[in-house]
Length: 455
Image 1 (cartoon, rainbow, N blue to C red):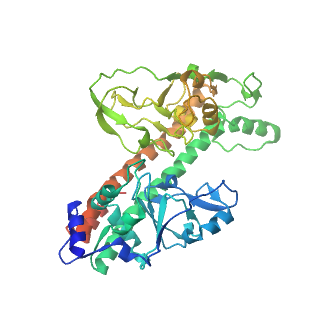
Image 2: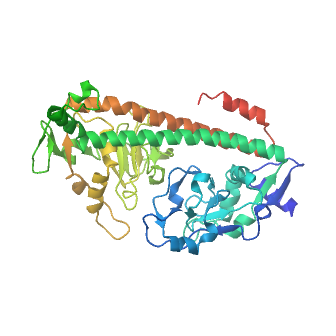
Image 3: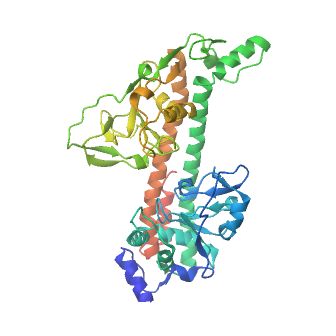
């Protein structure tokens, strides 16, 4: 059996020293029933219920926040077997099959959905090592080879059980796990920092351009002397009262503009058919943050075209509902990229700062307007350009727009820089860990490479 497993691992592109063992994943389980799918029928979202982890909650091998969807105590009781105790490994079965999550104490009591396998090991200390093996190039290759692709890529429990797992000495496993955790922690910190920065930028946009908080603050200062929270030089740029208008209250001196008046929608770009250019697909656009997961070179056929400074808004269900929006800052100067026809390209006119479109598109008010305006067949609805163009937005004066840009642009640039660092670390992880697992690289050498990175 071990020779067969070793052959499978080698055929998948892995390497393994002769003195290492190799076993099936099943042999590492706590018992024969220690791998199971999560909640089959979650029922309605229940306030105050038990958090349900869905595949969409897993990003980069972590569940960054408490899941928004909650199941009732009754439903949870029916699936008590998979409620998390804190020492499990989760493996996704669809979406990105084979992605692993090491359960943390924060997740105790949660329950995963049916698209996620809950794995309990005889030795929970092997979880990080097992995650590292399964997400290595050889592990991914083995998983891809057994996927059921009839409807969508799906990983089955019986195939997970039979996956080959190289087993070096306990000391080596511990060293590989520690190195893997260090990389994962650094990547997670960068992503958490970006989530915080994104929340700050979104809150500032809503405060200035939706709720008009600085105007209310000026009014409160005149009425009762309550000091505003913004720096005096920024606060002075805002009026102290709101005016009535057919579209609603607006700061004195500002104006209402339709999106079509304030933005170029799908502006023309020159890109010849067959030219190799940066291509962005819908799957690479995030539901949190403006950065993109992946950009590849592809010959231009037909699609939307964009350049740096453009905002890409998904127009199709459910991408629009999930808030898939990107800001283009990954091209060379004057370079043109392209992507799906399901993107709407927004580029601000006049005094609006370049990040205004991205932050606007992420606002709930804008998304609700777009969703209400969608038309087409069920499950494949789209928002049309002419309808989107009619959205009314408050247009600030040039000095307010300039001040907002000075505050928000460094935040967005930090997000982009952190994203690039996380990508570099992920590449380092994907390069070094397989070599550690194969015995080709010693831990001190890997640690030396890691320590040289100023992250």
